[in-house]
Length: 303
Image (tube, rainbow, N blue to C red; front, side, top):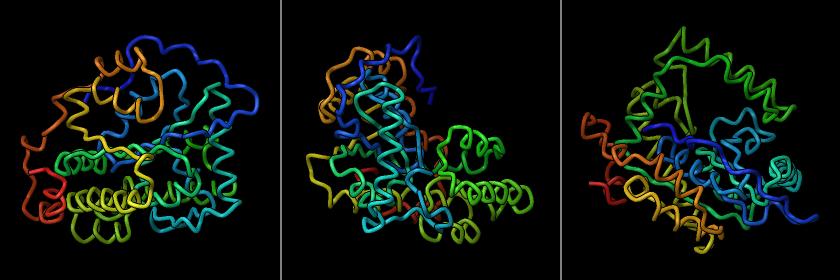
């Protein structure tokens, strides 16, 4: 898929909201398994002049639990302290950008929708779903690409990582970079961490780990959204988004309560690539991998 960054200059920042206005009024949370089109969807939405978009603030969402073995987090963990910290960081981000509303996308939030909803009770959830076969092939490329040892430094410079948690994340980054060089077939884990992901990676290989990652991400997200009011959630299929981006973006803007935007529509026309769908047909997956995608894949309408 081509880069989803807009061509030309972004619109000037919108005027700051009146003093005292809650910048976390109806925040937008983009959900979806990694490599499902969440980046494209959020980037198109971010062209709207009123939105402050934070790309994957996963360390903020994980505040206070840097050693957790997976990305699950229950609503009960949204204690007053945790809730206040996350909301304060998000509101400060929107204020710094002089935007009226906040938006974020973090694929690992698939595993903690009840927690996210407890922290942001009036959030508007956009759930992006893509064919698991395409997601699996795309994820494999991410899992097997060369490690980026500068990633943790960029995160530290962005001040995203809570200071109290930083030493734990730095140690984990070193472990993954070194482990990938010493024991590449077992050590490195990319993307959302479902329970048992390391065991699946070590015992069944990357492709199966990626297929299970998609399946468990979508399943957990749907289970979590089942407890969110219907008017606070919307589903978008990646295939429809790239086939008719303007219609899908109009639908998403209306759902989020945002005014129509020429900037969003122009960005959608320039960025969406219909050829990004159904790429799995060029390289069908093995029967072993498909066993982990089915029957959930068909239940979602992908045949």
